[in-house]
Length: 251
Image 1 (cartoon, helix red, strand yellow):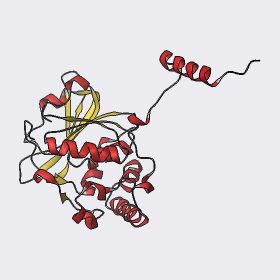
Image 2: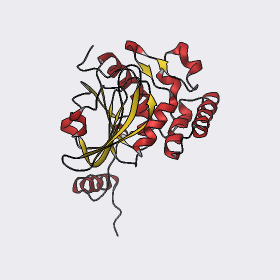
Image 3: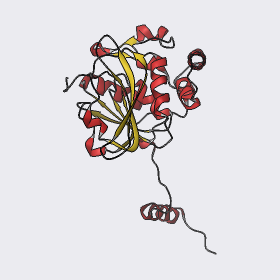
Image 4: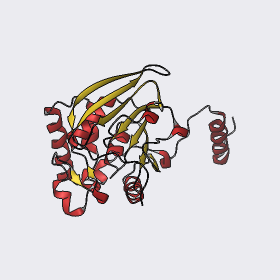
């Protein structure tokens, strides 16, 4: 039998990829950080692990969520002067008067999503990018939209530098991403006064949205499940306080 030359093997691989007989992947499309020690020193890794344990003690049981909390370097998503508080369970300010949510809130919303690896998830409100990183760590195919161009650009740079490559968009969260719908799950990280109808119809049938609904004084964490072409089911899951969800875009 003749030995197949290297260039012949390469050509054969390309042909098989094109034919769909084998799976071809690129690091450019990888959405998970598989090497957290590169971006967290031993102290930070210990603090992240302690945070995950604290959240478990507070009632977060989804091991996929807890593992993501332990792996994502939250200190990279806050200003340098706030890094000492990055692994404390509390919200922290970011640019444009927004916040990076309390880790418990991030974990709670993520747990309500019940992510299965490979699911297509739309996030409304990229913010710092921390929640998007958590979803990437959980194995979701993440789409995220941000209304502030400044936050969109900084989150994209930050996420990519950490090895996360979700699909990021600068736009109005109330409009969603109709060209990329339907989504298995939708996560809203700011509070509308009422559930945005356009987002409801971007769910696949059987999919659901997690959204805090209400005014500035407080909101109800709400799950909206699409049960048919024109039918939805609502359930409530506790009281929270989020920044208001706003329409339109800003620089």
